[in-house]
Image 1 (spheres, rainbow, N blue to C red):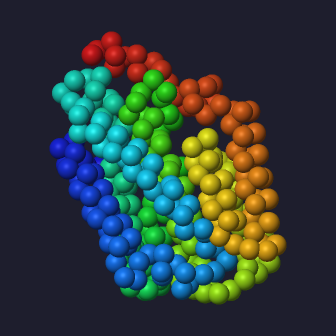
Image 2 (image 1 turned 135 degrees about the vertical axis):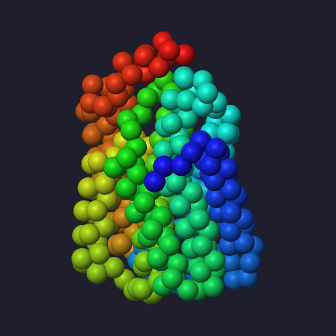
Length: 262
């Protein structure tokens, strides 16, 4: 699934621009994305402003990542190793942007059944990458840090998007059953126990967004889940530091070899 350096440097920003344009369409068309949300409320509907509050800073991080992707020179050994980290993520990154752009078109046309296909592809592909392919973070490497932040925040908001669209598309105006309430808690607890600070923080944010968007006892339960998720993430990462610690999986000898050659 890999791409060349030259392809990556154009594919990634092109997909970003397509997604950004689709987001503007979602905000300014009639009905807009919030209008559709308000017409299709359900038990996993978040407070809409939380999505906007996540979107803006995440775009800035993506721009920093894209700038570095374009700037690094693969002909220099030290920069090539930095670039390799980023290029490996480009296919998943581009797929995610294109899926979310397509999702927006169908969402704004109230075809939530079709939009759910694209949000599912994005969310599962991002989760696959961060859990199955992303190498351990090297805190000495700007490329590694940025790739972790971009991919994990993409996956983090992807979890919320998937829950939101699924509930709105297939369970409109429904209250959460006991199975949904238990499944939400178990699912977030399991993901939190497997998360670092970045993705784990996103999961807590997702739960807070859901809690604020709901009411009554379900809101209170989601708030409790957010506190529990935060506790799990904190306990797990304080017990086993995820970045450059003995359990991180990062091998500095390979980095030193590259730097010596550079």
